[in-house]
Image (cartoon, rainbow, N blue to C red; front, side, top):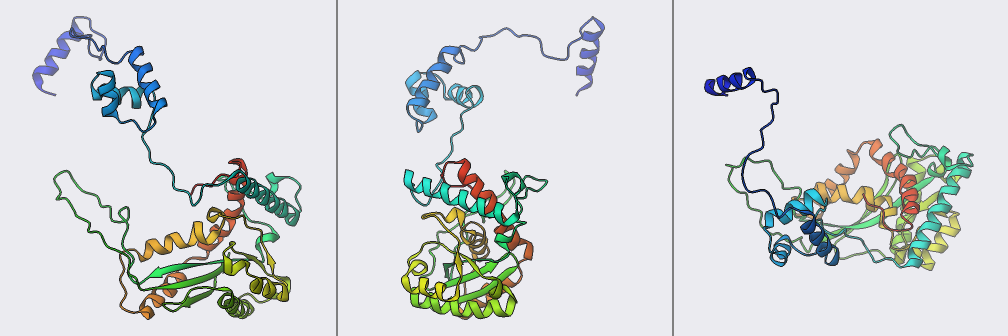
Length: 333
């Protein structure tokens, strides 16, 4: 503050002023931001949720700044994009999701010796804890395509800049046509089997059963005693997983299948916890050969902390509960 301004304030307070706020000034009062315009803006937005600020201002013949102030500050509206979901769920789909989630939660209570859902295990932060026998034998897995060249997403390429910093450009890059299919089976302790299909091959019932054979051997080596206790498998309802050949293999070795509702990647740990970070890690990378890509995949999985896998399995409980609370709708991340 300048010296003259300090002297001026001292004079004012010496003359008896006690308030630090500005005194009312003469001038034209606001006439656009009133109750009538607020009501009209609210009615237009409720009639058409996609109406733009400019369109509202033209229709009501008031400034855009006033419409923005009314919509955001007075009415509390926020202009957001719609949430992407895998499929438009029918009422039957939602009912199935709720019923399976309730059945699995009851199974957790029985295995944990509790009759009340509050004793399933809730941590100090409100997160569910998988302290029950259901998850001791649980193995989950799924397949995903991995490209030799995975473009970096726009969000991942965001950088901090000053107003005077030069504008950065991001060029559009397509994913490479060359790709391999990775099948990953894991539990709360880590990866049990990473199986890679060469370029041009995809999963089918016969190959999936062959993968199950290799996974059975991997379980014997990495999880001693699990085959004797009994394996519980969690996978989605893809055709290779539900084929008769696969069901015969599972029945022959006595593996239990954890119920999984249709069109529910939000309830599959590989989809909501594992593959997202994997694709984010590969973003911006380009590999010359499939061997280089496979080597990077194995290094990434090997360097993951065991807590990463534990959190992914434990989050099933909270997601089942959220699915019930949402009456079968999709669970957000």
